[in-house]
Amino acid sequence: MNLASYGLLHFFVDMVCAWAMFAFFREGHYENILIYNFCAFALQMPLGTLLDLLRQKMRHLPVFCASVGTFLTVLGAVLHPALLGLGNALFHVGGGIDVIEEDFAKNRKGSALGIFVAPGAVGLYLGTIFGKQTGNLRVLLVAAVLMLVLLFILWRGRSYVQPIRTPQRLDLKTTTIAFCCFVVVVLRSWVGLSVSFPWKSLPVYGALAVLASASGKLSGGLLAARYGIDKVSAVSLLLSAGCYLLSDMPSLGLLAMFLFNMSMPLTLYLLIAKLPNLPGFSFGLLTFGLFLGFLPVYAGIKLPISDAAFGAVGSILSLVLLIAAGRAAKHGKISA
Image 1 (tube, rainbow, N blue to C red):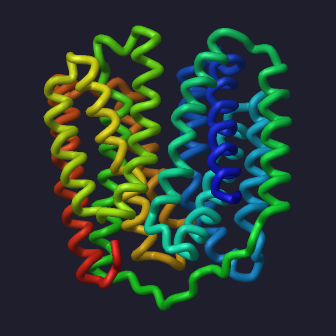
Image 2: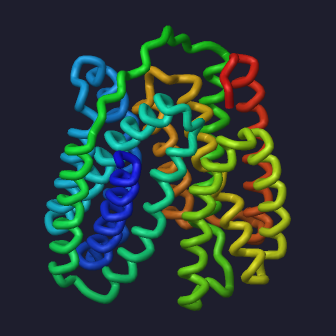
C-alpha cells in the first residue's frame, strides 16, 4: 500500500506543478521555469543529505517530509514557483527514501523505484494540458482532496522499515559508480528535453510519447530485477540508439523513448545499492543531474548534429557508462 500511495501521490504532485506553471506563472515564464526547476531538482541533494543525517533518530521523518512537500506544493501552486518547487523537492526526497527502504527490505532489486517514478511523467503531461486550458482553482481543489486521502492511507497503513546501517566508504568504486550514473542522468535529461520528433505535435502521438516514457521507467525497474541491470541496459540502449536513427517513423520514435527511459531506475538502484546509508543523497545527486541536463536546453544550446543522431549518441554513451558502473558494482560485491 505504501508504494501504490507514493506512486499516485507522485502523479498528483507533478500534475499540480505542471498545471500551476502554465495556469498561474506564465508571466515571466522564462525566469519562473528556472526558479522552479532549481528548487525542484537542485535542492533535492542538500535536502536528501539532511534527511540521511536525521532519519536514524526520527523514524517517520521521510514520510513526514513527503507530507510537508505535498502541502507546500498545493500552497506554492497559487503563491510562488519557488515554493512550488520546494514542495516538489521535499516530496520526492521523502517519498524516494521511503520507497528505497521498502525496496531493500523486501528485496525488490530496484523494481519499486520504477513504480514510484513512472506516474510522474503522466502527471506532468496532464498537468500541462489542464494548465494551458484553465486556471480554475477547482482543479487544484480536487487534486488537493485526493492527495489528502492518499496521505491518510499512507500514514494509516504505514509499516516502519528499519534504516540500513552499514559501514560506508568513499572509494574508487563508489566514485566510479556515482560519476557514471550521474552523467547518464544528465544525458537522459538533455536528450529527453532537446530531441524533438516531427510527428509529436499531433495530440495522439504526444499522449503516446508520455505513455512510452512512463512505461519505460516502469519496465526498466521490473525487468532489471528479473534479468539483471547489465542485460537490460545493453538490450534497451542498443535498440534505443537504432530506433532514434529511424525516429522519423512514429512507431520507432515511440519505441526509442520507451527504451531510453528504461535506464532511469537502473541508475538509481546502482548508486543506492553502493550507498545504502545515503539514499537521500543518492536520490538528490541524480536529480541534480536532471537539472544540469535542463540547463543547455534552457540556454538554447543546440549541438551541430540532428536530433536523431543526438538521441543515438546519448544512448550509446549511456550504455558505456552503465557498463562501467555495473562492473564497478559487481567488483564491489553488489548484487545488481
